[in-house]
Length: 169
Image (cartoon, rainbow, N blue to C red; front, side):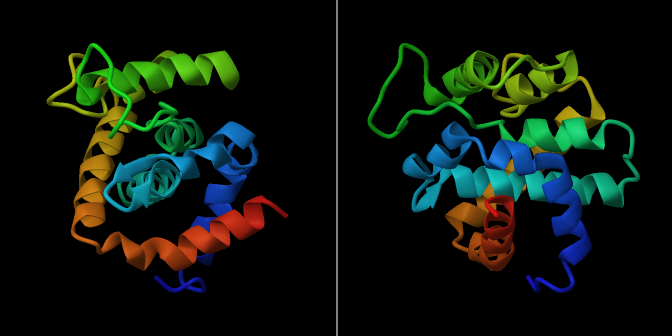
């Protein structure tokens, strides 16, 4: 991805998320593996940036900021899932852990944001997506996870680096 051609999306993304990207716990998501060599922070920024572009492509203007912010936090579970096990399988457990962590550390979620996060593993999730934002997150998460596993999400690295550089200025 070329930084110049992505400039307007990066600007909008930062308008929506810079405050969250500066949060120490959000920055700390780099410590947790998500898909093989991809950390949770990279994956979450990748997914939420893709959600922003999908909002634009489908003309979703209402609630776009709220949708992108929820997408950024969809995997805010804050544990190393490869080694730390819970009573429930990670697929079912991590959306609930993410909601708990967000509300404990970052504030309340709207009903739409809560559904987005709880349903992002659909059809494996117990809760189905109930909004355009929830469907966009579900689709983007599957796309980006596939790209992570196929080692092609590295194309996003220049944009990710620019987002982090500008968010921490």
